[in-house]
Amino acid sequence: METFADLTMPEPEITKVKAYSRKKTRLITDKLPEGLPVEIIEHELPEANRVCSNCRGELHTMGREIREELKIIPAKAVLVRHVQHVYSCRNCEKNSEHVPVVKADMPEPVIKGGFASPDTIAHIAVQKFVMASPLYRQEKEWRQSGIWLSRQTMSNWLIKASRDWLEPIYEAMKRKLCCFQVLHADETVLQVLKEPGKTAQSKSYMWLYRTSGEAKHQIVIYEYQPDRKAIHPKEFLENFSGYLHCEGYDAYHKLPEDRITVVGCLAHLRRKLFEALKILPKDKQPHSNASKGVDYCDMLFHLERQFALLTPEKRLAERERLSKPLMDEFFTWIESLAVLPKTLLGKAVHYAKSQRKYLERYLLNGRLEISNNRAERSIKPFVLGRKNWIFCNTPSGAKASAIYYSLIVSAIENGLNPFEYLKWILTNAPNMGKQGYVAAVEDFLPSSNVLPKEVYTPGVNRVKSEKYVWEEE
Image (tube, rainbow, N blue to C red):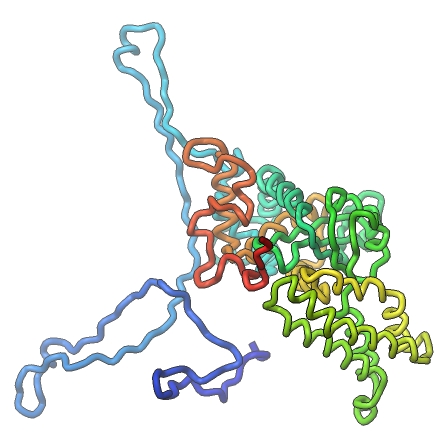
């Protein structure tokens, strides 16, 4: 709270403008969704007091002053009891040897033999994978409501629901992802305590693959692997053909070049140059080589912001006209530098020289991006969660986490409410194919056109990347 609170800041005032009224601009914009339920509380004088103090005449309402407050209703637990009626024929019971028995339709549970509902599992998943609340904290929160629900039970529910209902959707998302022609990839460290053949302190990895800004519907896939070997992206991208945005890790450079064109990340180079700049005394920073390198990168990024709303064809033409000469000038300057290899600037220069052919490849196609920041932003939800729950206990838990993060982050990227989306999946998946329920696994994808209105986040466009989508006709 201390980071954002400023008790000296007054409440927002209404500023009069010629044609309309508007609130003064603030760093943080407070906004409530449209259609929020309104509870009206009338404050009236008692009838005995509605008498004029001057002439003793009856008072009437001449106007109203309105004050609005945001009211929060804490979540509450409800025990849902399903009662299935079983019917038989009275006449057959008396006069026939065979008595037909008919049962009323009752939906299948999300976990057979358990008392978990789709709402409960969705709530636990969102608390852990969106709000980064570990299960032991959720256990304490449940107990404050008088519900003794152990972290072991919650863990079992998450893994069972993932294995039974979410994994087929996850696999369908992976297949669809590899049909795109431009992807982003990244990876980060994960600790798994009970990894077979490894010590608890050893490193495992969570790999990430996702669509680029050109995609109308975004897909983000997390994949757990026990190590960082090059075989993993090779196997994942076995059916992929196109451009892959990534960092300078050698595993990506070992992908088959006849199918996959690796595109480097200029943001990584800028970061290395900026680190070399930060260690210099402030009076020497403006005229240093590190500052000049950062300026070159900033100019290239500035051009990309200018090209953001152009079609791929026009963007490619503008890059040829403006970005390519600047990029050539930048690398000519890089080649002219004589720096010590073990200094931060020397490491940045070495990275630029060794990665040049990958860094320049975004100039080949107007659909490509100058950096891999899109993948880095997508991996942040996992990194934030890892800071709180620190590790996974078993590989099955790590795999379940990858599945939940994939569905939740993809849902958010497409403007869906993750809780409503998961609840809808866990309600429909056990009853898939029945009348009134979803017919196929593909219908559960975040890009599906059969998603109900309830799963959309109020006030958020379903396709957040719409401004980056162009018609290719």
